[in-house]
Length: 148
Image 1 (cartoon, rainbow, N blue to C red):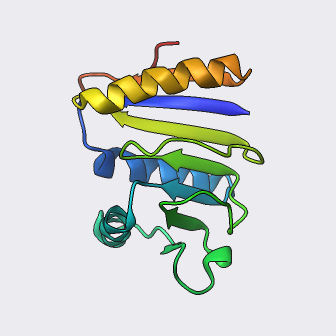
Image 2 (spheres, helix red, strand yellow):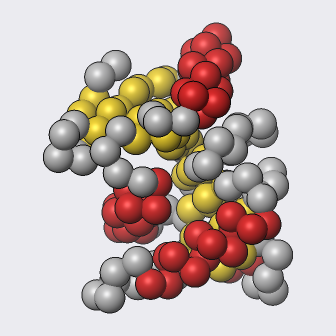
């Protein structure tokens, strides 16, 4: 399993996440996005409908009917009702049950000390578990550069 750490230094998660979701859909992957609570689920849901006028990201909430049919499922709990291939962890959400995914993405805010500390701890834990880890950081233009 590939485990990618995305260190946000130049943009907000709300700006960086949608292009990564688009790329995942292009690969025909089903996606789960895990955040930290129901309020953040609702905010992310609203944002994905409106983040860019010329784009469409088909998605739904885990609490809604037909969650299992959503190409992108937004949740704040464990579980994989839509059979996701890739799972994004945002807003400080932490991986628990990671079995069954092809790829995990942990996206963390470089200006939030708690998220930085959590990402460091997750790196150590997941590395000890034998995952294939890589670390990506934004450059001054907001593009991703692989650092490790």
